[in-house]
Image (cartoon, rainbow, N blue to C red):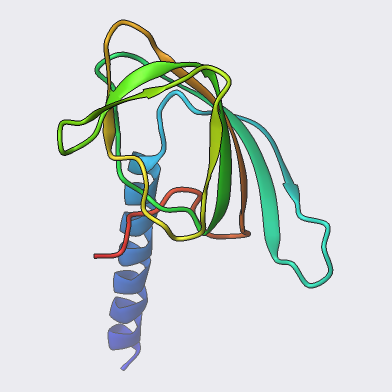
Amino acid sequence: MVTTAKWIVAACAAVAITGLAYADDLAPKSRVELKRADLDAPGANMEVVISTAEYQPGDFVARHIHHGDEAFYVIQGATVEMPDGKQIELKTGSGSINLRDVPHAGFKVVGTSALKLVTVHIVDKGKPLYDAPPK
């Protein structure tokens, strides 16, 4: 009985670690976290995370979700290509908000200019910042 319980615990741990590793694969390698702090609101178990990210031409930004809201501001604009082949220009000085659990990104940076962003996430504390969209 003890051996079975140990195997169950080990299997659960392996699944959890694999899930965290996958979530880390979604995070951009160029992302630099500037500040993280608890959200100061009664009963909120959330945190605020401020980051920068830079995507070079040819970089692919995987489709993902956040367990909370993400606001971004484009420091340096670039053209991105969506999975359907449509190209969109993300202009310097523009910004937008990605809502909780809504899949976004899934594009490739094209052209000669890098895409540089500042992001602010207000997300559930203890959950991965980047996660795979539901299937």
